[in-house]
Image 1 (cartoon, rainbow, N blue to C red):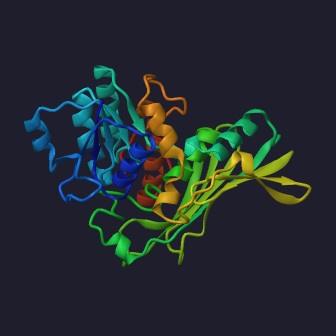
Image 2 (cartoon, rainbow, N blue to C red; image 1 turned 45 degrees about the horizontal axis):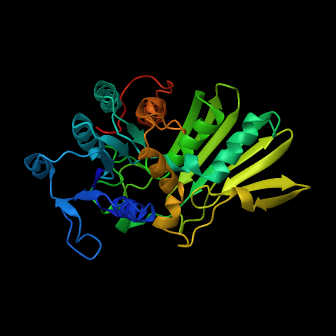
Length: 342
């Protein structure tokens, strides 16, 4: 089995660590123009660009796309056409037209193309999904989803970050997992309204956003996210029904908490903790490990619905929100490009 990691920043390095945890003893390559040889990469095949890959005439079984967001389409399209199974980090692509093209290429070559929404594998998320399906909360009336993190000037000095053309803002980058969780758990969106805040000295795109959603099942949810805080405080989903209340929280939505007799109780059996503390590794949680085990398996259909065709809807919602911020057009999930990716 031949695997290539495309992009070797924080995410790419994390995937390599996951390969070790999975005890993969396969032919692993890295595609990264700025890579340097060290103890972790000395035994790996290194490619500086796509031309090097083409010249090598090497074919890969799997490709992990962990580049800056605006480059996802370019590399995913190339490796899918080489008949490799492809896993793309979030957001899968920035443009709707690119998502459509990847769906067609996937169908043509009969290969996997999955999106890395790894939080769907969290014990806490799966437990909440189960409680909802069993109606343990009764009639759900309100969902409050919040992300409060810190991203400073140094973080946004990286040329592609915080720009609508190459990345987007807090919603499309940091809070996209929270948006995905709301749709995954509570269903599609009927309508929404949105406000955003901008710090133009720090980044072009929004660094604060507040959205109210009405889901098609008439559940009301709110999503609030910012990178203006002085540290990473929390990510959480607070679900309230007429029979109870559940809070999923932790730096990567990793703990399950339920109100009993007026007290919020931590459920150890349906929670996961991380040894690294707060930071990039713990923020990614355990989901990638579980996702990769399934991705490298034989089944083409993901148990958590991560196929790209099943996640086109989320990208349309994202564009709808950015359309509203950009031109005061509150149309919902229209198949229309927004400022994102332009």
